[in-house]
Image (cartoon, rainbow, N blue to C red; front, side):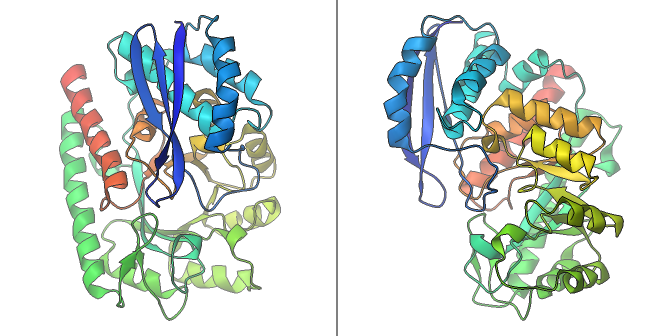
Length: 387
């Protein structure tokens, strides 16, 4: 397929910060994709470029691709990887990811398929897996304006064991029932949490507490069948803390899932904490990067990984990261960023690659709700087309 034109626009994300939207025309089909941005970033993430720099690069990039014919999404992604540089410093991971997704959307539309259907076909993924949910309900750290050091306080539903083995139609219905329960939990929390009560970058409740542990007490009151978890985001904690004391307290509170409990190069500390029975998750540690993941696997540092495609810059590299994680029995959490847009491609990619969890924020703000609605749409679509 010949790419005729690419345009890049500057748009606002959910925080009111500037991000980009990539529009592509190929074989008469036009599609667009908008890109999120993170505030809490690992230093090993691929490099994003400014809108101005991307615009400067676009002319030469277009001249090069307009003479080429890309048969598949993988073909185009390999080209982006080659031209982008080791850390996407030449094109920007924000641009390469946008181009990667929008070209896949065009290929899907050309075949009369949804994006997730096209990617399942290209990557030869046959199974359907309804992921669990990691829901950030109370926020702290750099995403919030309060006194909490930990960045996210979670409720976690590990897969949908109560509905495994049922038809997609029944899964779809049960997922709606699950969303109703989540909204009920949010209402209960809103009535019980300390006031004044606001929301942070990701739609999580944001208020002051007596200490970093009190939010878990509120979550325990309303959690139903969910388990407790947290993104400690240790890279962002600069003051001196007693980590051993912290994790002893969290163990007593039955907090099971921990994301980035130490800083991004402390692989051995991750491994030691894993031995204590926590489900330890890498984000800044692994940054959706295969080479970082190989180190974590070699040191037995983690049980699971956060997957953020804009940390690496293409669909293909995201897939390779997920496959390596799955081959080594790690669970995968497909995650939004704190600065989001109303685009919903994250759901199609996660369904395509059979991830174990989605972390897309609470279903209370437009940029997060659109992801839940897309998941519901795909569940209905699978029911209608496969049964």
